[in-house]
Every structure is written in C-alpha cells, then in structure tokens.
Picture (cartoon, rainbow, N blue to C red):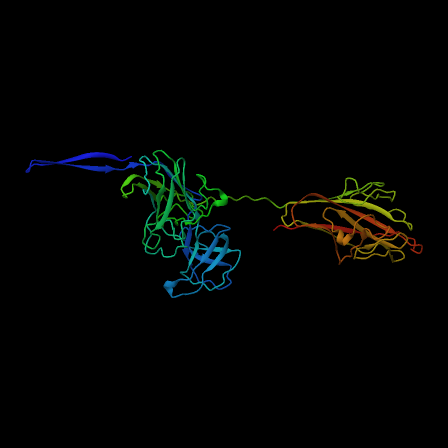
Length: 484
C-alpha cells in the first residue's frame, strides 16, 4: 500500500521549517514468474563452411546444447555480405562429444539436410519459447486507468532479430499483437488493455496492462499469462498455450553449463513488476527471478528381442481351436502327430492329407517382423527321382489332382495371398512350396509382436498315377525382426 510520511527540513539561517509529503511503494505479495520451460535457447556460429544438402554442421563450442528433436535455423550472415535465405526446420538428431572434430568445436547432426551453402560464422540457432505466468497480490488498490507494468531485462544493440534468442534477455519481438497476453483476477470484474514496448535492439521489453474496468482490490490474486490464447483461468491450459517469448541463451561466463557438464548452474534474469495509479505514480513493486537452466537428457537402452518357436500339433486336432487366429475348422488327419522338427504325412492317397505345426513369434522390433520359408527342394523320391507337383505361387488344391504345399493361417497372414477357409473343396485356402532360391512369405506385421501364432498346415494329395515311393524334403523357417 502507499505509505505517506512527512519529511521536514530545518533551514537554520532563515529559521524556517519546510515539511513535504513523500510516497513509498510497498512490496507486491507473492510475486512469481513461472515459465513453461526453463531451458535456455541455443545459438552459436558455425565453425566451418557447410555445403548445400549437408546433414551436419560444425559449430564453435560455446556451451550451447542442441538436443534431439530440436528445430534449428541456420542463418546467412549479413555482416559478411551474405543475403541467402535462412535454412529453417533443421531437425537435430544428436550432438558430438566435446572437441570433436577439433578443440573448441562440436558437430551437430540433423535428420534432414540444409538447402543452401552456409559459411563459417553463420549462426545456428534453436530458439526455446516459453509461456510466462506472472502472479502477485497488490497491497494498494489499483484504480481504473491505473497500470501493471512488467519490465524484462534490457536488450543489447545486437538483438536485432526478433526470431533469434538474446545473449542476456527474453526476446519478446515475436509478439506482433497482444492477442496472446491475458489477465486473470481472482475476484472482481477488472480487465486489462495491454501494450508492448521496447522490443527492438537496445530496448527494454515492457508489457503494460492498463486497468480498463473496475479497480483491483488489495489482496486480489492477479495473474498475467504471456503466451496464452485464453485467460479464462489462472493457468493456461495446454491447448491454449502459444509460447512466444524466447528464453535467453546461457551467459557466456557461466562455466557450469553445456553438454557433459558435471554440475550446472542456473542463470537468473530478473523481471520487475510495478503497479501504478492513474497518474503513473508507483504504488507497489517487486522483482521476480527466473531460473534458466539446461534440461536433463535421460537415456535408457532396451536390447532388441526375438523369440521364435515351432510346436508340433497332434493328429486329429482341429486347427481352428487354440492355434492361429482365423484358421479354418479343419483337422489334421495323417494318423501321425507332428512334432517340432518332424512332419510325417503318412500314407498318401487321392484324398487330402493334412499335418500341422504352430510357429510363434515375439519381438520388440518397432518395425515388426516377417516370417518366411525356404526348402531344400521339391518333395522328392530319390530312388525314382520323381517330384510331387508344387508351386511357389499359392494355388488351390483339389483332391485327386497331385499337389503338395503348405498353407499358413493366423492374425498376420495375408488372406489376399493365401486365401481362407479349408484346404480343398473349391476356391478356398491356397498352398505353395518354396525352393532353395525362392522363399515364400507366410506372415508379417509392422509393429511389435507378442506371442503371435501362425499355424502352418502341410497338405498333399496324390493322383491315381503318382509313382509309389518315399518322398522327402526339408523346409526352413526364418523369423526376421525389423528394428527401426
């Protein structure tokens, strides 16, 4: 509140006593400036020329930290006579260790590439923007036409680009209008008319709220949201945040900063807040310190995993139950159950003989997996050198028309390739057989897999003229995970 005192001066020679009335400003209660991110901006000159379409840039190491996912801009250097277009949207992949490629330099790697030639001395910049939430309780009543004045640290003569961070101040030049500055009052019907001044080089960025309707009572919580599209609440919802104020870079003399620092010390720029009456006389004032400090990069490694197993299916088992999802209601019928390493199709006639195995895949590969098969060759009788008919292209099987192959079914099987339904009896499921040089894909997915079962049905039918004999072949299954 405004406190008045009488200051009296005695002039001895004239024996006169003069008394004047002075005003002293009280301190604002609970003044704080909370920012949505305390990370400093990063900016440094290039330490070497960079060609067009470069996927990396050498920088001078001034303790600036470029983190994965940052959107960086490489500017042309007007001081050097360059007039080229800035390269925006350079996405940072990583940053090299200190003194790489040489003392005092580092390399910043991008996921994309530059468009223009960049030269040593050009600036590489990552502006870190934040929402400021300034709150306090006035001691003295702020009348209509009174003001709330928020003063940020002064800019330097070099702070000419409003999109580029300052070495020592918050850059507010991005606020082309006051649309995204809001005021909230815990009680009453007060409103603000905002103005922004001093955002140019050597200026002192200042946001002024002029009270437009209803005075602000003592003890009311005032919240100023800088970078918010809606001021309906004392906090800015994530959906309303429009961070525009650019955090300063770390101070050049702060040695406890930079990637790999054993300790890090915050810089603490000061924000001054004053309330004034309608004659611009200060009522209350205070200073808030804002800590600007590097973010903590957290890293953990999870090893890639793959489990792949083959399980035999007993004879007279309906593969529709407890096996690959979507398999047909069809049972194994060879009289001999399959195990994990051996499939015996028994004595084959002009009917369709079926045996089966379950192939189960799990992987944490984000790109999923593919399940393929190759073979040693045709199902062959070595004594008479006869091959049972087969094809690497999936096709339909008809009982009594000689054919041998496998049919996969399950969640990750393409029915467009392999068909669906039972084997035989019309245009339903299809069978195929791989060769040593031509594999067939049985199943695949493009995401992680947890115990995905693909059932492989072995099917054969002979014709009346298929030569008698013992037919054999070997099939090899390969599960290949994809780790992005």
